[in-house]
Length: 164
Image (cartoon, rainbow, N blue to C red; front, side):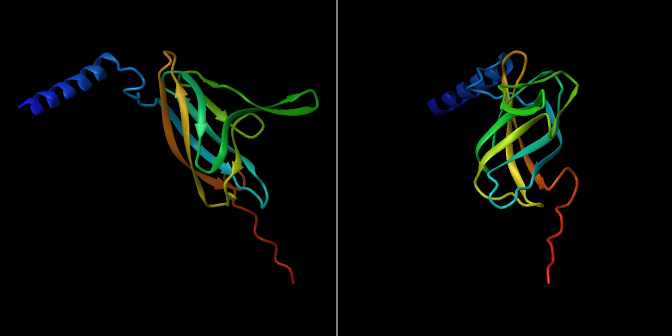
């Protein structure tokens, strides 16, 4: 009987927490971000880093605040921009995602940087990536994406050279 009461009380607590809004440590809200056209640039032998690109659309607004993957020792949200005649790349703490606006992470702009790769990324493979988001109220959520590896957006890897 006591066990049934404890089970009922625990269940009631979880339902109330869900309805009233549990702290982030107890319940994780569903992500309200769509991820489309994601791809990771294939690497060449000896290359230890590469970029991941995609289009993000938030239904409610918020920001991309982090990224992780088991394929790399380091994964960061990055920005690449021109400073005069010099191209500069740097880690950024977040990327704003206005509500209902597509934000493109692309070569030469915002992107996900994968460094200290654990193995080469070959055309046709895929990389598991977890994107972390924060909404306007500070609630965190994440989206897991299995991202295909390509030599360039939508193009197959070049054929290996055949020599006689």
